[in-house]
Amino acid sequence: MSDVKKIVIPCSGIGKAFGTVAREATYQLTETDHQSEYKTMCLPLLVAGDQEAIDLLKKSNVYTIDGCPKKCATLSVERIGVNVAMEVMVPKVLAQNTEHKPGSVLDIGRNGVLLAKDIVNKILEEGSD
Amino acid sequence: MLIILSTKYVLPCAGYDRPGGKVSRLVVEHLQSLDDSITIGSIGALSSERPGEIKDLRSSKVVCIDGCSVKCASKLVEKHSARDFESIEVSVLTDMQDSTDDEKARTIADMVLQLLAATSTTVPKTIDTEHSEIDYMTEMIDKFILRIKKGLFYSDNDFWAQKEGGLVRIGISDLLQQMVSDVFFVDLADIGTHVEFGDELGAFESTKIAMEIITPLSGTVVEKNSILEDSPEFVNEDPYGKGWLYVIRPDDISELDLLKSANEYFAYGIEKAKHELGKKVSE
Amino acid sequence: MSNEGGIGSTFMSVSREKIPWWPEVDTDKCDGCAGEFDCLKFCPHKVYRTVEGSPPHIEVENKFNCVVFCRACQKMCTKDALSFPEKSDILKIIKEVRST
Image 1: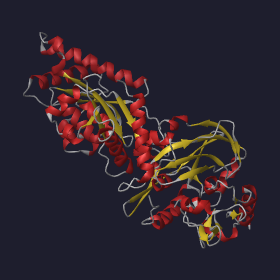
Image 2: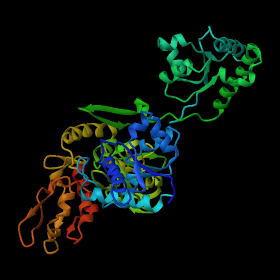
Image 3: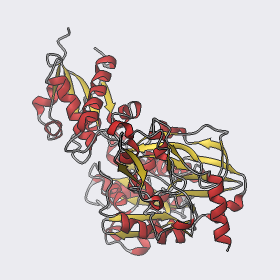
Image 4: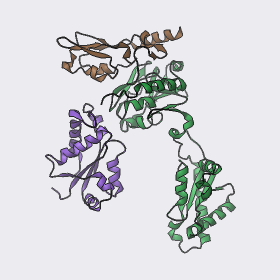
């Protein structure tokens, strides 16, 4: 296992269920079986310009999860000069698994959790090492 | 909608107290002697929003001359015009550091003329018809904005049809796009599919609903908007433009008489929107 | 959701009640999706309601709420229990009423 950390950054989308799904997917990586490999970082902290956070990010493999085409997570990371190793768009993952349509922003439901799992699987399978 | 801009507008920096500003002024003098058809803009007139100045700006091909990195001219143009424009920043021409102001000014004047010439023969950025309000009827109903594009026909299933020569392009109305919310999947029928009025031509799914695309006319699909497979969000972002669905060869163009005109659909849409307010599909 | 529909509304300038468009439920085939009632859950226009029975199943409650030419619920039905009129017949009726 390389020393380079893997950092997953979900978008902050608070208006849509996809934002909650992005965070759920992140927690599935960082709080369960894969927690030794995957960490997360607070997006607003980066946007606020926290230098320590930015420096750590520059040394890591960064995975972004965006809830909508505005791609706030990806754009914010790129804007501070960090390359994104892999970006995942929640709507696109849903389009490939249409039965996993999440519920509401407050409760994504069983299907929402499954959609988060689809995202996690995508990162595990396709994310470069 | 394409507009070729034939008039030329050059906005020089007004920083006369600075070297960059002085060079900008010299550029203008050179330009005026080389091409007297160029309108020289005024930072003062733009700032105070003199109507004639704004009109000149918006109907011309624009080049700004910024004297320094503050870029007052460019900032002002961005504020008053939605179009793309060119800028030259005097202070970045570092390879001319040893030249006299006059030499710099001549070089920059030539650059300006080249920029102006280039765009009078090429096609400039197309005006986004989304922002051209003369093409749309809008109505605010509570916080909901209803936008109906003029010149189109509309079905009661909320699809629009646009005549394009002998063919008809179809898409979903802005009303429907707002009702269904974020579209994340579009499934388009194949080219060559023949349908009768009211048949399904593929489907789409949004966070709120899975819906069929119901054709507003009988005919054969000659084109489909495949880009929606990768970017389904175009349906929401630009339902009358890049979110189009199909181009159809109609069996009988007079069938469009069955549809509503833009005005008729506008009235219908207002009633529908009022009815839908507060009646959200549960997520 | 996409059409207010219902009694008193119009479709293509024809009174909705004059257009015989609504789903027919084949009660032999409908089993209520083992209590899931997929078509009822899917339809945003409250066309359906549940009916007691063994098993509980579906029936049409508000037939004029059904959006003319929409058959989206039919795709949800795994038992092929839903059917609709021929669209061409419906269009003929609409044209006839309009021309009077």
